Structures are given as C-alpha cells and as structure tokens.
Amino acid sequence: MKFLVKNCFLDKEKTDCIIIGLFDSCKLSISANYLDKCSGGYITSLLKLGDIKGEVGETIMLYNVPRIFSKRILLVGLGKESKVTRSILKEIFKNIIKKLKKTSVKNIICSFSEIDINSENNIYWLIRSITLFIHEYLYRITKINHVLKKNIHFNAIILNILKENELFIAKKSLKHALAINTGIVSTKNINNLPPNICNPLYLSYKAKKLSKKYPENVIVEVINMEQMKKLGMNAYVSVGDGSKNKPFMSVIKYSGNNNTSNDKTIVLIGKGLTFDSGGISIKPALNMHEMKYDMSGAAAVYGVIIMVAELKLPLTIIGVLAGCENMPGSNSFRPGDVLTTMSGKTVEVLNTDAEGRLVLCDVLTYVERFSPNVVIDIATLTGACVIALGESVSGFFTNNEYLANEFKKSSKETDDKIWRLPLFSEYQKQISSSIADFSNVGNGKAGAITAACFLSNFAKKYNWAHLDIAGTAWKSGTDKGATGRPVELLCQFLLNQLNNIY
Image 1 (cartoon, rainbow, N blue to C red):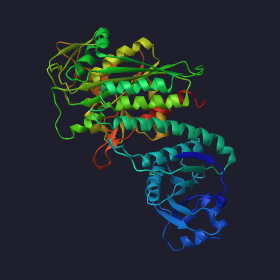
Image 2: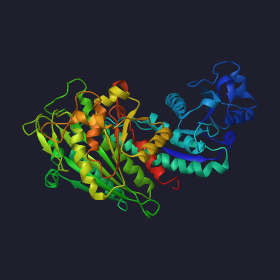
Image 3: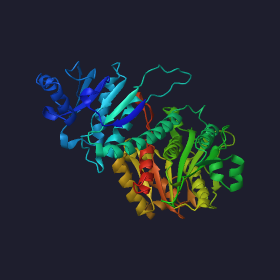
C-alpha cells in the first residue's frame, strides 16, 4: 500500500474514490464544497434528502457524480467543525475503513487537509494521524501457517493537500508516520506470537536481524545466562532458572549518522517475559494464555528502535530487550529466597509472580556502563496498575521533572494517555525486609507504586522514568491482540529531543 501527499485537482482525478467531509448541520468542507460546485450542486441536492447530516460516524457513498472523474465520492460526517480532535478523527477513520472494506475500492484520495484538529502544527498532526489510523484499522494478526488472502489492502492512498505551501511539512509528516507505523506493526507482530515460537532466544534472533537490516547504525550484543551469572545478575537469572528456555538479554546499540545535534545517551529497557506463569506463585488458569504479552515492553523497545533506524535519527540510543521466561520447575526460585542483585543490594522474594522487577533491577544496574543521560523502562509490571488506571491509561513514574514534562507533552501530542503516580518515601517502607535490603512485593496496597519504588532504588545514578503498560499493551475479548502502545509515545519523545529539526 503506497501513501502519497500531493496537491490535486479533485474533479479531474481518475481514481476509485475521493473521501470528503461534511460538518454537522450539513455544512460542506472546503473540498466537498469544491466538488459540489464542479458537479453543479449535485451533492447539495442529495443532502436535502436528509440521509446524512454530518454527525460523527455517518458515511454515504455517491456514485457517478456529474462532471467528476472519480468513480465514487465518500461523504463522511465530521461532527462540529470546532470540535474535531485527534480522538474524534480516529473514530471517523474507523468508520471510513469499515465502509471501504465492503467495496472494491483500491485507489483513494482523501481530502481532509482543511480540517482543524486543534493541534499546534495542524497539518503535520493531521497527516500523521490519518496515516496511522488507516494502518491501524487495516492491521490483522497473521495466523500461524495461514496464507493471507490477496488484495486485502488498498493499492494507493493520496492525501490531498489544498495549500501548496503545506506540502513540505505534509511530506515530513508522512515520512514520520510511515516509520512510526513500521515500528508499531513490528511491535504488534512480535507481541502477538505464541510463546512456543517467541521465547527469549527468538527475541534475541529478532534483535540480531536489526544489525543486518541497519548495518550502518545498529550493533547488537546478546548476553546469555552464563554471562549474566558472571556479571552478577542473579535476580534476572533466578527468574529464568526454572524454564528450559533460558534468558537472553539483547543489547541494541543505535548511533545516528552525524550525531552532532544531540549528545545524550538514551537507554530504553523493555521487560521481555515471553511467558509468565507466575512461577511457583502460579497464576490462575483463567486467561493465563495472555501472559505471552508480558514481553510487551521489549516488543515496544524493538519497535521504537526500528522507527529510529528507519528515519536515521541523529541520536544515541541503547535498547535492551530483557528476554526471560518465568516457569515453575525444580530450579525455580522460591518464595523466601534472598537474591543478591548486580548492584549488591539484596532482595527477599515473597512472591515469584513479582518477577519483572527482579529482571529490570539488574538491567537498570547493567546500563550504568553506558553513562546514560536518560533511562526509560517499559514493562507490563503490575495488575495493580490496571486496577488503578484501567485499560486506557499507562502508569508513569519518574525521578526527574524534565522527563515528567517531556512525557506529558508527548502524551498530549499523541493522545497516548499516561498518568503520573508518586514515588513518595512513605511507600518505600512497604517493601522493607527483615533479612534483606528489600522485599519484592509490598503489603498489597498501592502495588503499582511500590513496584516502581522498588525499581527506583536501582536507578539513582541517572534520570529515570518507568512506564507501567500492564493495562494498555494488549486487548482481551473479541478484539484480542497487541495494541502497539506505547511505541508512538516513545517515538514522539525521541523526536521532541531533536526540537523538530529533523
């Protein structure tokens, strides 16, 4: 599927379908008004029938419109002109794709550039949003050993830009959108794989392939279990000890060409529990199959690195995929064990299902060797975060106000919602232990916070942020599958570090 931005003469374009908008009370958009005049008022005459009024979600297909070369015109309800937001636009495109899938349309012109979605740099966010929404609603999970039907996507989509002076920023937006989408799709694809295929070793193979695909910018080092033991990563090793699929930590080093605009080293750490049974503190059987998504953090980091490499951003980024599998077995770590972490701090294990923080605490220590300016870990860490914030909002924690402000900005721009939770010293008391420096769980209250507080003890040497995506990384039910979050959020955070110069 090819995407293009161009300035079109809408009435002269020979295409399968032109998509135009209608605001509430039957107010035509600029593009719709132009085609109405070209057709001698044909669209206005149809509106008098009352079949569409311009409300969000309405669509009507027009055929053989007089003096218009396009075979069809799809008229789409946009709602109130002053209240079109990114989230409303997303709902609009959900209905557009649903409608178009029922047709034989292959080539499309979408003329929405006059719409104001109440964003700074409106045309940039409009084009980027439309591109990402179309891809999102066309995405399908690939079934194992299943041949996809041909021609399930469109051949070409042209995004019409009414003002020629906006073409440059529109092309930049499209370039960003396509790279971000490649990252999101890569994240979803690897995240949706079953755990008997995507185990820690497979995750390391996928990481290695990045260095072959992007040899100028990416170097990958894979650290196996024996190497982890030598490094003193005993907490990480203990989590994977009960599984036949041993842990592998993939360290992806990205260095942008001519990296002169930004001298920061940014580390992204992804929790990569390719399956989490809970270990000896085993989870209930109901929905345990969804614990293949406990690697969503690593999948997100993988996707972000792909976006960065596609755009060749002038940044220095270390991506760590902390691959592991938590299974009960004769070698499994136990409740009551005391583990000595890579930092030298000790942890009393009270629950083997609080394993992600044990993996991450050693990785947080490991990445000190890179002298990072910023470290961000992304993890499906706690069910408590889902209880607190539900399935629409990710939990956010940080020890740095600059990062708090930057993520707040990126969240608002992308509509990938986060909510900052506290790291007050009072919560540290809940993870105290009588025989170790810390316990790996608290007293059952404020579980997302105590987990983040645990991690904060291993992130004191740099600016650190933690995203708990347990509620947002995948969906259950009929629409079950990875969401690709928070890839766009992280991509925007990185783009913002470049101050829009790229």
